Length: 246
Ligand code: NDP
Figure (cartoon, rainbow, N blue to C red):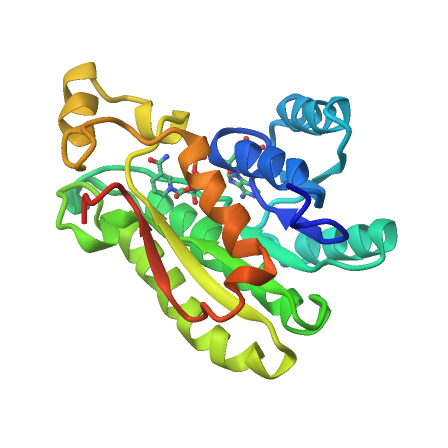
């Protein structure tokens, strides 16, 4: 408990799903949390409200991570409010599963805009504005280790996130900042369950050693560890959070 006391942590895409649970767990560990969201204002308010009710400290900030100006303003506001940002969790992401032959230009662009440009935008700000000794946790996916039909564009975006992670770890290491990517396996959120039959969900859940979907808590606990000083020597790594799926 309180291992993250005095740390200020920005979690992108924290209105719903894994990001919301990550935000709550970070706050429970003592961090002050900036809950970023794009469109789900009410859900973001619920996340910050839950944190405050539990005795924590959080604010919600709207910004589309694919928009450089909005990301810059989010950093301005967050640093204006809390005085600094120590940890950046790049969780915001979208997934459209379609065979490559059926994917439209718009679907291709949208996924790259949010998942790759979104990560790029926050990393670029963090390069000069994250506190010395800070930490960055990017979100890739264990699907980059598989060859799943219909995941082509999505894994292309997450592969790019993994490469950015490795290079950025070297670029900001001199300031004591460590940078890693986590790769969740199938996790029980709207992003994963939307549009899937129960049969398909069960089949994908059976790919790991524990024969169940991950819950957002499974991912959040690892993020809390990575955000802390205990994990400082881990940098430039892609860490599978998938129960031995891949
Ligand atoms: P959800 O769809 O449940 O939640 C996505 C979150 O991202 C929402 O809070 C949403 O906010 C936010 N978001 C989407 N677009 C933007 C944007 N342009 N700017 C800012 N925020 C945005 O997804 P998950 O929680 O399942 O996924 C979280 C991360 O984990 C993603 O990067 C995903 O790729 C990755 N992942 C998920 C897996 C899974 O099985 N669930 C497996 C592997 C990786 P809002 O609603 O306000 O727009």
